Structures are given as structure tokens and as C-alpha cells.
Image (cartoon, rainbow, N blue to C red; front, top):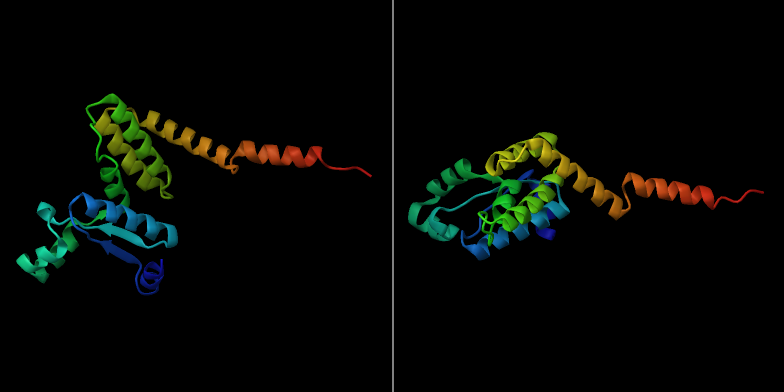
Length: 171
């Protein structure tokens, strides 16, 4: 957290680049979660070809090549996390598809930008041959359910208002 705060003082954007193997991917996901939890920094994720280590790539290809890679291959944290959520799933299997779609909709629902949400909903609709309206409805229902269960939704507000009204004492 201290590192993220220090970064926030000097930058508005952070580029994450770890090893391309599974432990490296998990480290990226963990770094994204920490950054999002403690700041509003824009995040890009860089992939090193052939699952190489960043230091190995710089040794073999040079700093200029690494800088070029950084400028050309960055993707958003959401795009990375949507790919990361596929790990260990067989998307030819309907149960795994449903599990992935639920995770993906949860991630998309956490986005504050409607255009960004729309972009990822379009991608899911196209990839899984699902009507985008159905995905939007599911996203809306999930957000509503989450709000109600967390005590921040309309039902919770109605209950709180109703309870305070019923408990009012008249003199």
C-alpha cells in the first residue's frame, strides 16, 4: 500500500509487467487488486512474449525493445482480469461457461464507466453468442441483488425508512 501511495504522488498511470507464467499472472492480479483498492491510478498490463521474465527479455532484446513492447502491448486491467478468470476453465463446457460469465459480469459491474462496460459486454455477447440485452439485464439484476444484500439498495433504504417511521414516538 505504501508503494501505491508513493506511485500516486508522482504518476497517474502504472504499468504492470511480471513473468508470463501462472505465478506471474497471479502476481499481476494481486497487484491490480491492491492498486484498485488503494488508488485511482490507471493500470496497464504488459505481456512478455513466450512467457519470458522481464529481466530475461531486457537481457536478450535490449532496453529499447522492452520500451517498444511497453508502448505497443499494454492492455487494461479489466481485459487482463477477464483473461485471468478463464484460467483453469474449459469454456467448451457449459458449467464452466456459466461460471466464467458470472465472474465476468461481476467484474464488468464493478466498472464505473458505462462505455467500458459496454465494450466488454459487446465482447462477451459476440464470443458466447448471447444477446447483449440479456447480459445487461443480468448485470442489472446482479447489481440490484448486491445492493439489496449489502444494505445499500432501494429495499434496504425502504426498510430503514419504514423501521424509523414505525419506531417514531409521539408525545
